Amino acid sequence: MAEILSLREAVAALVRPGDTVAMEGFTHLIPFAAAHEVIRQGVTDLTLVRMTPDVIYDQLIGMGAARKLVFSWGGNPGVGSLHRFRDAVENGWPRPLELDEHSHAGMANRYVAGASRLPFAVLRGYRGSDLPGRSPTISTVRCPFTGEELAAVAAVNPDVTVIHAQRADRAGNVQLWGLVGVQKEAALAAERVLVTVEEVVDALDPRPGAVVLPSWSVHAIAVAPNGAHPSYTAGYTVRDNDFYQAWDPISRDRDTFLAWMRAHVLEAA
Image (tube, rainbow, N blue to C red; front, side, top):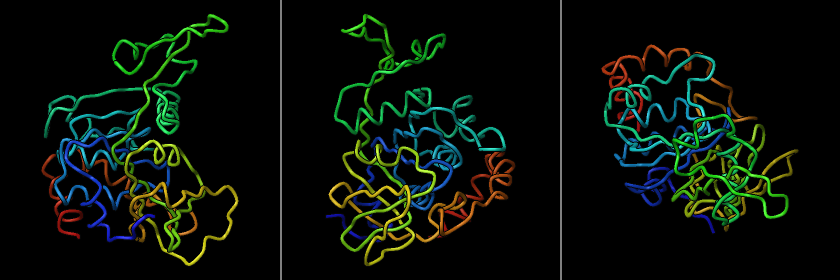
């Protein structure tokens, strides 16, 4: 059964130097509070996996936590570039960053294969792209029934997946709803799963379109109200659009970025 721990205890127990870590959440339910605790604990040499790395990974990369990024599309949504990401790729600051780039469909299928405990997934994709020549995790396979050549992508099985959700019950079952991305698949593909939640309740009442992760699939739950900020949690908080705009000038300059992280993350525990 999933343990209910403090965020500090949960990160210390589950996220280790050198791990492959997926922090998923599409538009909302992005686990910023957990990422900030990873930064505070100084966990480094991470391979970060995410379908749409945005500000959460810009912060982790800028603080030197990542050695590699496995991803599809990266940017500050609605604003522009991720400047800490760009600085790491272009200038090796604060450390060089290895890249493994995919399409959205490729990444989603990699998670599905990982959750299914299969070695790879098959899809129609990547034709006309130079990505297969840049990634050792993209190949081709020929259908044994039709002879058609298809794209194949290696399964991804994170050491730990971190997500944010609306709530959990006291038995450790987790419920999330709204714009659900690949959280379920990323969780089931991982060896360890950490979920931050807005609240713990006595019982999970049914919600349209909700996903329930059973307790046996989750290792630790930490209560982190507003833990998705500046993204949002449907039914609990709203997106902080001003923050995403403000992040652009903050992240452009190294010293400004570091000062902001010291004030709002490192000293904000």
